[in-house]
Amino acid sequence: MTVVLADILKGRKSVAISGHVRPDGDCTGACLGLYMYLLKEYPDVTVDVFLEKIPQSFHMIEKTEDIKNEVIAEKPYDLFICLDCGDKSRLGFSTPLYEQAKHTVCIDHHVSNQAFADENYIVPDASSTCELIYTLLDKDKITRSIAEALYMGIVHDTGVFQYSCTSPSTMEIGAELLRKGINGSKIIDQTYYEKTYIQNQLLGKALLESFLILDKQCIVAVLEKKDLDFFEAEASDTEGIVSQLRLTKGVEVALFMYEMETHLYKVSLRSKEKVDVSVIAKFFGGGGHARAAGASITGTKYDVINQVTEQISFQLGKENKQL
Image (cartoon, rainbow, N blue to C red):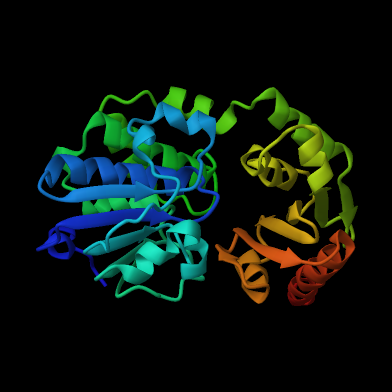
């Protein structure tokens, strides 16, 4: 399906924009980029953006102060736009707004997305949802602030243009956004690479206590709730740990998990070439991409590790037989 922004907005007087729980750079950038564009080009439309608390580093993007973190007796919206969200359940606190809206649209690039909205624009080959948003906008009307938001999202979901999802068109879009006068290096440094002292402490603990399994093809690291409490850390402070684990030489799959509440773990998976982690995540009720995916799994840490690595082992075994 091809989405024409003017068509989905025709006759709409109120629009809600939201993304997935624990919003990352792509989710945040897509929501804010589209939000700022609608504010500018559709002044007669009431537009609100709903997201959970975002990392402090993302506040360099304009209009972050407009983000609503809760729903307070909102009237039903004419249109609800889901961005970077592969499943309705991952909308979190904004789910009631989605269910009450007169019409819904989902724009996403997760291969696991089951097209749950009234209209769906799902492109699994796209590097990011921000790349998709860029294709929907009038390029001449993209301001510097909008470009900063979209560039941040593309940077985060491509690992600064190094992941396999980075296509020639992704690079070309990045170049066009830079031509809007944004400081690309600053966005990359401040939102992607720069870490707080607490984030470095968590990373250090995760690396120090990590271990190799499956003939050293898989690296595993776990942070329990008591660890996050000790460092007075939030869930967003674990961002980037799994990507660092993935860089370990000889490793095909990185598994990082942290305890959200007693015996409930957020599991993040990253792979290099042999394993489609989206299949594994989907098996556990999650989703994502072939090389980056995740799920929330109940059990002791040993139960969760055993269950996930069993699925990883299955794929590695098939791959090794083919070789």
